[in-house]
Length: 254
Image 1: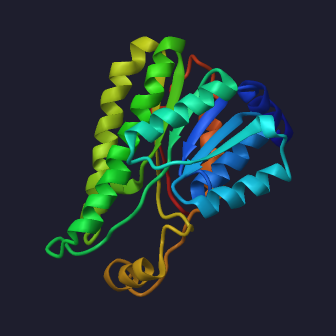
Image 2: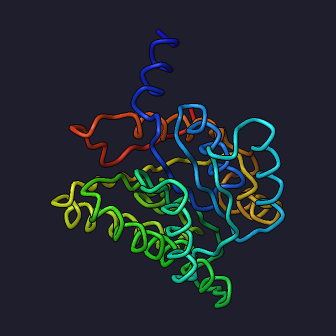
């Protein structure tokens, strides 16, 4: 059964092209590797030059150059998103899937606002999704098909105390996703939201872990998902036929 599932995914995904923001580490990297294994061509980007260089070298040891493209780019810059999309089209002629994965976290009490940190998080978590989506939708409308997967969070469904600012950005993405799902359906474009619980990645910095242990976790680190768990779920969404739309999927550690 496992072998059949793998072959089925490869058959459905072969020659598709996907763009992944924040695609050189954590969830994005795990997803890129999974989708490459499934047979997709993968375009990944990050603002971090070092992680882009390291991941490009890693991919070069495994795959031919025609299977991947790694770009240094920043989701908060709309013109850079247009250039990422243009680079993908130049190399692969089409874009089948875009995964809005890039995101950052800022956690504090509601009456202690770090304006710089809050502004940066809104720019990345909300405007970044909108910037990449806008750039890729122009292509998908011409194609009359496409799949947009927005990596959100369970915080986009239920906000915990001391996580209100982060949760607000994720609620914004959920609302945005609901709206574009309706707007883009006539163009054959599907929109999915994927809402994971805690995932063990570098997203949780030592400072954030210390804060959460004190404010949220009662001194004990809770169970977490692995990045590969998210990659597996995204593989499943990407492998669905055009007659199926997975609108929302929630994953929690168990």
